[in-house]
Image (tube, rainbow, N blue to C red):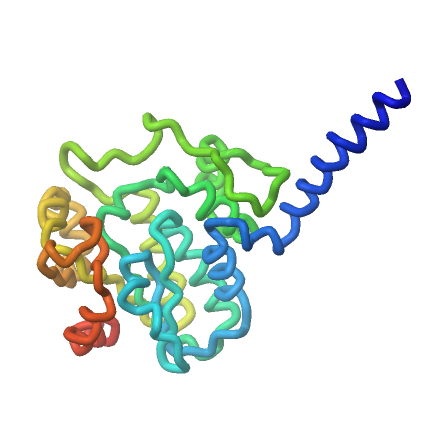
Length: 269
């Protein structure tokens, strides 16, 4: 029996303990597909950024502005999975830690706005990396998330295999599209937070391939009327230049040819 217990500890419990300890340290993030999101959250809540204008948004924004990181404008765009609530949390971090902040530009593609933090990678790209900030969400929104996702994960920094059942994920393939109540609420909260802190808030769409016109046309009139400036800001390029129907396949080349338009998009209200 003693030999069995010894082998159990040595070859089973000890290795499991080492794995658990490893994935509870930030070093394990180098094995995590969402490491960039953890870095993003850490950056946003630090005092490292001193830019007057902050760009927030998704990966479509990132491909066009990722190199924009200077004392005037700093890009904090990364991924669509954390939607507007995640960007609201990043904004709170910047307002608390960036005394030079004067302007915030939120750049998100319109289809993302139809979700309600119920996308395939929401758990890995939002729930886990944003966990230190989730207390800033409204109580009912935290409760909503806790019904969808695990509340605790012993392997803190491990990229999880957890994903929502298809029946609970956002479906955009049929019918009209509308901006979710959750995203609309946090757009308004971002606007309000900026107003209270004398920061200008601008909400626009990044450039999109022309194939997305059909999705934009499917938005109901209430959505379009409530965010008229946002929908009118969309710049389209030929779909043949898109790699996946939403991202540009050669963003650097597009940037070179359309620098003035891209600058105007983030500099004009």
